[in-house]
Amino acid sequence: MTRYRVSLGVSLLVAGVAAPRVGRAQEGDQILQQQIQQQMQNQTQQAQQGQQEAQVQAQQAQQSMDQQMQQQSASYRNTVVIPEHLQVGNQHFDASVTGFRSYLEDIKSSDPGLYGQLSPDVERLEAREDAATAVAVGGVVLGLASVIYGVAGRDTCNDPSITDPHFAADIQAWGDCNSRNMSKMATFTFVGMGVAVLGGIIAYASWPRHQDLLDLVNKNNHLSKQPLQLNVGYDPTRRFAFSGATVSF
Image (tube, rainbow, N blue to C red; front, side, top):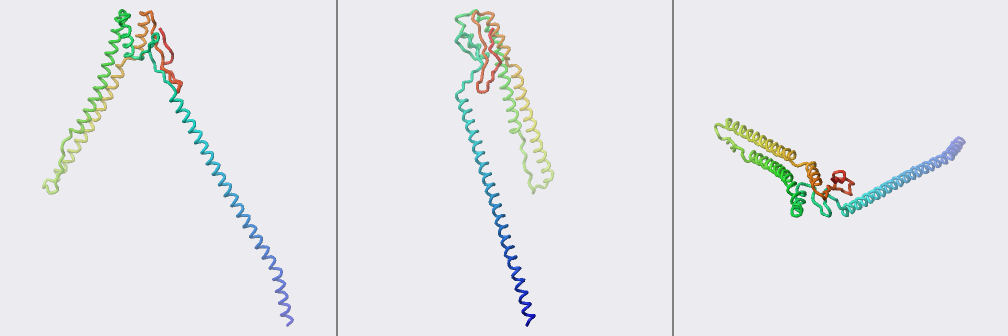
């Protein structure tokens, strides 16, 4: 009986000591879990705030770009581009052989002598323009004709019939026919493109140069009392001069 009492006393003592320890451990675990949850919530909130700030910055950048594009578009609409032109007094003519011809026709009645001296030079330049235009157009026409012939001028290749006793020979002939058509189409297409490009190169080389127009302006100003000015063009939106400076002889 005494041993039972001793055992019971010891068990109660151990339970009394262990119970508070278990309770404190559970409380520690709960506190740790709460701290971890709080940290996770804080991190989540910070990530959401970062995303919101990034979205706001992206919207502001997009709005800024839209405003700049609208301002540039409005500036382009309200800007007048000044083309290169010939000017004598208050009259303006296109800075080209055609424009110089218009100038000559305008002074034909008032200064027939000057017209007679300058008209042959303009006629030569006009003839060069006509020849260059004819070469360019001819090159394009011949090139297209060559391409069309390469496509439309193909031979007719009949499909061999399986029941044909000469099927093997017929299939060989059919393949050779298709090969000839492909080769023909490629050859005439290449020739057509070459002719068109060559025509463009010849036309570009034959077309009157800017120096030819300057020579006409020079000659006019040596012979005429009223100088002719060749004014360069200017694009204010690009701040770009087409020819460099205003030229007066």
